[in-house]
Amino acid sequence: MKISRRSRVPTFAVMDILAEAKARAQAGESIVSLCVGEPVTGASEVVRSRATELLAEGDLGYTEALGAPALRIALAQHYHRWYGATVDSGSIAVTTGSSGGFLLAFLAAFDVGDRVALARPGYPAYKNILIALGCEVVEIDCGPQQGYRLDAAALSAASAAGPLAGLIVASPANPTGTMMSHAELAEIARWCADHQVRLVSDEIYHGIVYDQASWPGASAVEETASGAIVVSSFSKYWSMTGWRLGWLVLPDDLVPVVDALAGNVTLCPPALAQYAAIAALGEEGYAAAAADVAGYGAARDVVLAALPRLGWRQVAPPDGAFYLYADITASGMSSPEYCSRLLAEAGVALTPGTDFDSVHGQDWVRVSLAAGASNVQEACARIEKWQRG
Image (cartoon, rainbow, N blue to C red; front, side, top):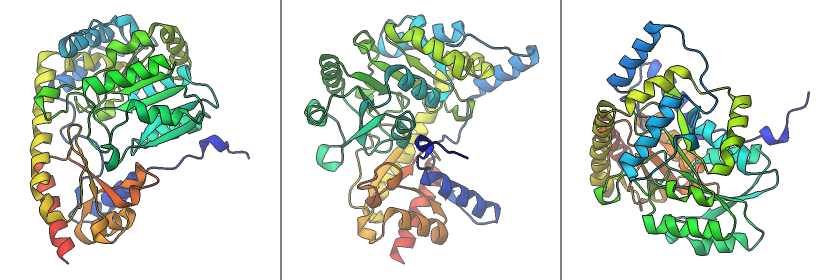
């Protein structure tokens, strides 16, 4: 029987490593996993308690396709709290994770054959979802020579081969942890508006920022009048990965489009997660999340202090998120071999850069700091010992 060509997207190498790490741990091996971007803390007590109360109160039915009004109002208040921005709750669409948000945003904004640009290295699901939807992905090299950042000049060069329909940016970025300043994001937003390019801003790591002068991150929420889409999530800052809850801030022209798509694709996001997430947007929820971020900062300090002993040649500036992206060419191995041997011989799981960069990724690995400072310290000690032979 037929299998669609567009479904033939690559799997994540990290999932293979994670599966092997779990199998080794279940077999009794001592494994330190720094391969997945999943906070070890999980959802805060206030969120879990609210979920318990909701279940005790009775069954939960469908919500509106764009999400429960109470959660959308709370999210609008969140934007005022963090950015001083006025956002109409009617422009917010709650989604089944940010992954569901990207799918809805791309379906709403792009047609088959549209050229959509993104940075390389970058989160692989952007590219793979776009390919599955029949879009042409235009990758723009954003490695060390470019300071890991996109700019208007790079976008103009990318559009010379044909007009762009869209651009995806992420700040803080996965896998590099680098951030755009307010001025840099504004420049990109102006370029997109001037060239009729739909800007999609991935802001799921906002709040996980290590320089208070840059906190919580530059947002494109003020650019929605020019057609920009903001994507965010409860998974990272609020440590609610398995709750599968994200959201979009949409320009006016896309609200009815996404409403219709959401009703057909998912009916609604998980109701329990929606109502429990309102508690995450209260004082206790913010306080718990801030404590988690402090833990990532401590883990970041551990690995930065260990860098001279780890043998990694260069590291992307880890301004935000909970990752460190490192060049391992001094090892003489490709990143898939390096990660495979490191797991087998030292019990440390990292992610090969080939997940994020099909051109240069064999020279890089991603380290997740979400496992906490003690696990990162143990992993660094094991890597040092392993590399000494």
